[in-house]
Image 1 (tube, rainbow, N blue to C red):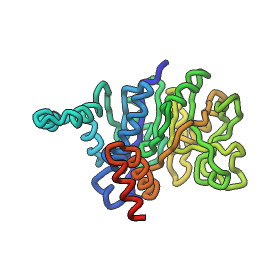
Image 2: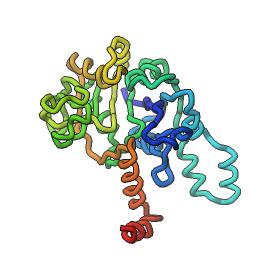
Image 3: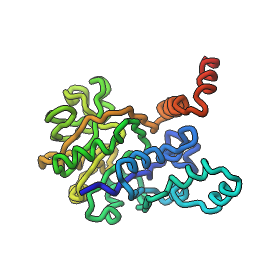
Image 4: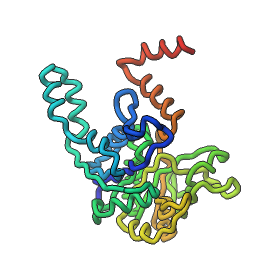
Length: 289
């Protein structure tokens, strides 16, 4: 079955970016002129996903507003012959379906997914981190989808290799290599002490999952983990122990925009990629350095 639905949790308070996130969700912070969340949706769309389920808090109406058509603005852009801007605006929603599940409290990624259960229905689906951009030739989620389909899996996850000393910061993937960059997943261990880190150096950054509906049964019996919250990684680990969960080492560069420094690095790198501003921006950076 082809994956057509994606669940993206965006209900967090974004406290690292206060005070701006008092009114603007961190997923809508701009990378030059396009919000982080748009890059995530673009990646999914390039992989053939057409339906998006956002898990939002009651206060995050701005995300709904962003993905709604804006007829008055479109009319004005057309009248003033700003056709390039009009086309960019239309691309946000063209051919796509958006729906919303409410998470009243941010009680973990697994809890967020449970909030979307009715909207997912019985379908297989993709699951994204709402504030991680992955730049790659083949969309990162498509790489995971290919593994999911190849092995007729119950679940698949994208991993990234990092130096051993950094592994305590992330969920570790305990795997057995199959071939190339494909692995059989045995378990997921969230932020283990150094002596228990996985020897394969494969970790979860910028969560990219593809899952069968059976994950919901496991989530409903999942005990709270770190910070007393329900984590998808814990349930993925339990599902992996049933023997039909796979992982791949994703190709591409991950931009984790969830903290200020990495967000600023992302803005600078993406600005330097822009043909319309890169020359002047590069000169400016050289001058201030």
